[in-house]
Length: 179
Image (cartoon, rainbow, N blue to C red; front, side, top):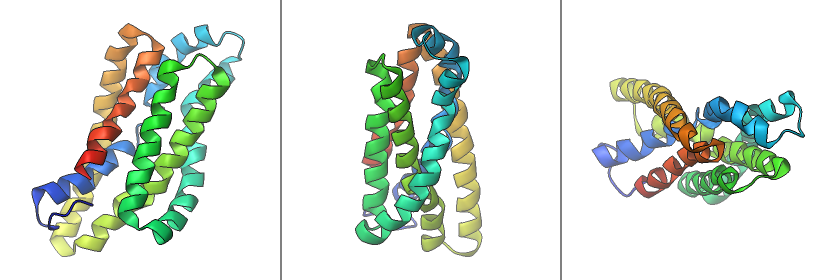
């Protein structure tokens, strides 16, 4: 994480900000009806898969993340995962190919999976006792709050079309900077 001490607000913010990415993969579900119009050659279930395929990727990413954390260290694994999540999360902003969007969504899930377990284990690496309990509570709250705020953002971005809804994944950039 950052070079700050574990007791600093910056370190805690960096650690907790990672959790904002954990639950946002399916947030684009509200855009699926508009997406279905673009991908009219695909079945409704195929279009719905765009919202759920990241979950499969997260499972694969958790396995990959453990290997990467051993090889690269926790910070590099988190930063790599965030960078890949940012890039793959934004691919649907510019693509009209169902298969490109589907692949990007799977890669997004894998990227999130690489740092998924680290978002929690890093907290237990740095904190004990009451501070650990507080940080775990904050982690859960940040994860839920991030998902809620980004769901709201998706609703607003829908005004600009389904492609724009994927701009919510830009949130990875300030998280990378903070981390």
